Length: 91
Image 1 (tube, rainbow, N blue to C red):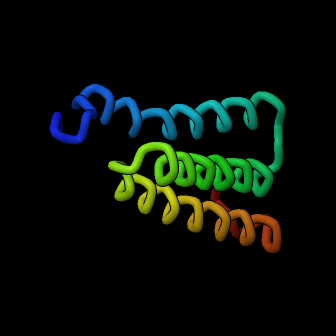
Image 2: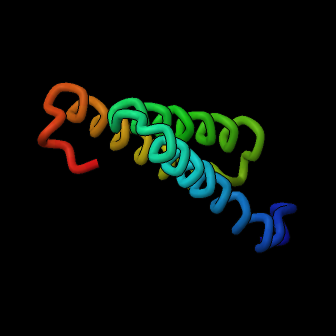
């Protein structure tokens, strides 16, 4: 991947950053007892933010951006279910 100007370590770091963000939001939500639908919305917004950053700032990572967008859609859908039916959501 050196022909793109991005080393393998950089590629791995760019895939780890969203995971670290999701874990930090999870830790904060458990520490402050935040409801699950709010946590899921924040995580979805984080994924959308990384998607926008990876498409606009780093052109070579459009596939990672697509995966993050799919994850954001799933998180926002789960947030909707958690808001409407709190007992049914497992998150």
